[in-house]
Image 1 (cartoon, rainbow, N blue to C red):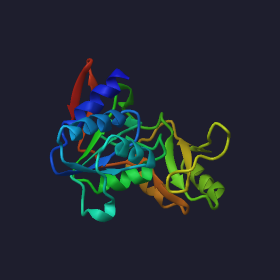
Image 2: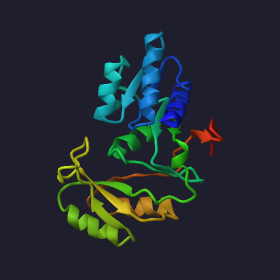
Image 3: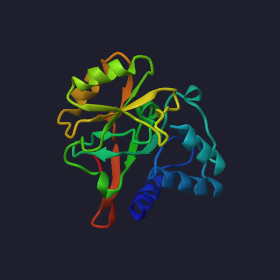
Image 4: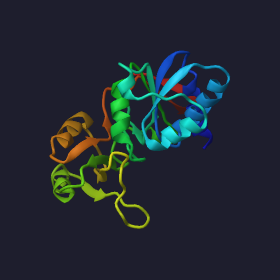
Length: 222
């Protein structure tokens, strides 16, 4: 918790007056949003674009003004977490189920800052199951095609054993690869499968990573 708060609050320092900011989803960027709420109360002028209904609710509660993608041409900055970050700055995201909106907002942003505690840094992606958002119709067949790519696909379920539903009304299939050596190729291959809406591989999108090294906040860039 201490690491998450440290890196989350550090990322808030990159937000300046009059910026349009993508607000990520998750337990680390939560601290970024809280810090931005404090700064807004102290006079910071920004507009936020949330990546999930959960983040939208939090931002409204603490007074961050919000706009939609329909209102803007681009975002100055997006800040979000990651489930894994490899040494080439490729990411696995989607543990919270918001990967589609997160990727749309990251792509629309001039800078994409990733906040990640030290446990999220890996040499090779894949220990964390790769989330893939799929339409409900025919999801079983979609999963079979995913299996052909070398994973064990599992429909994400809630505690009551009903399917997890994304903010977009879709399912999440968590793909257990163990190791992803060519994330860019896999990203393309997954998105070629009919029924796949988007997957949680974020390649060539990260501007910088804020993390912890030797118990200190550390920033790394591609």
